[in-house]
Amino acid sequence: MLYGARDLRTTEMDIPTLGEDDVLVKVAAVGVCGSDMHYYDAGRNGLNVLLQPTVLGHEASGVVVAAGPLAGIDVGTRVAVEPAVGCGRCPTCREGNYNVCPNGTCFGSPPTHGTMTEYLATPARGVHPLPDTIDTVVGSLIEPLSVAVWAVERAQVRLGHRVLVTGAGPIGLLVAQVAKASGATEVIVTDINDDRLAVATQLGATRTINTRTTPLEDLQVDRVIECTAVPAVLWSAIRTVRPHGRVTVVGQAAPSVDGLPLAYLQRYEVDLVTAFRYAHAFPTAIALAASGAVDLDRILTGRFSLNQAAEAVQAPVQDPTHLKVVVTPDS
Ligand SMILES: [Zn+2]
Ligand SMILES: [Zn+2]
Image 1 (cartoon, rainbow, N blue to C red):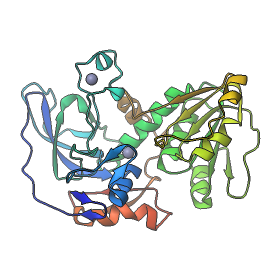
Image 2 (image 1 turned 90 degrees about the vertical axis):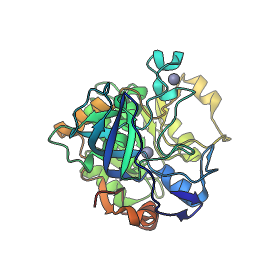
Image 3 (image 1 turned 180 degrees about the vertical axis):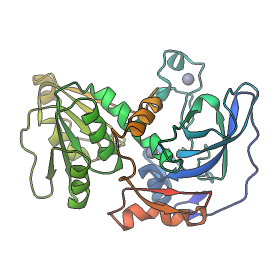
Image 4 (image 1 turned 45 degrees about the vertical axis):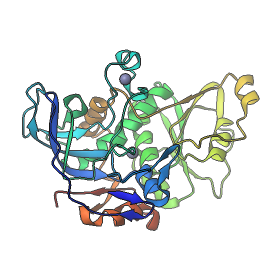
């Protein structure tokens, strides 16, 4: 439970009660996300501010240990948890765009409690069974992989495309793999950290560029997928796209930024689009991980117990060789 910036404590809570359509999940693992690190460090993430004590975490996997009468899922099923499934009733949800539901909540977005807990309750539509080929703990990475699946879908990556992925953090490394699985023949990954770029190469990037030492040239790529959240990176990446290319913003955007090269976008009719969470992406993410088309194991670099949660949310900042670390309430 986060009480304020840098004040994370373990506490006792009641096991949640279930609605007719809910399931109770015994949590096996929770991935630590950039947003958790921001909340821990500053008590806020983008526009969302911590105003009351809130449990962190939104990337979870576990085992269904109880189910409401209408849930339709067997007790014992191993699942990945989709943390934001919308209200299910508004026009946006009914169109299928539940990721941008104006009424929706998300685990771990204050004031909604998150998944760094031993038990969580969620509507049955928010859990996705894991096949035998995906380990339960690794299943917590299905959530960030779903971010990558949705990003590549929003980017409209097509067969034979040349794709530039800016940022080789966990999301960028997953986006690069999904872009390749989607038929991109060239995947260029940028970062300012050579260790991360080496992992990108291991995971199938065809070329890497350390932008600390090598400025981006005019690559004439078909697609850019921006995963750094650094505005200056986005502005320079926009100029690497061919006319009629497409740039997709995935990294958490700042509330407002100066420098958007709007006239340049217009001159070459470059599309600038955004991606927010994901809709209907978990089954695809599970299929990609199960088939081996995407390697999740290489991304998972650390495991921490629930009592070490404060350590876990600082680990990727303190040791940049970490990619995704998980908290394992079971252990
Ligand atoms: Zn996340
Ligand atoms: Zn809705």
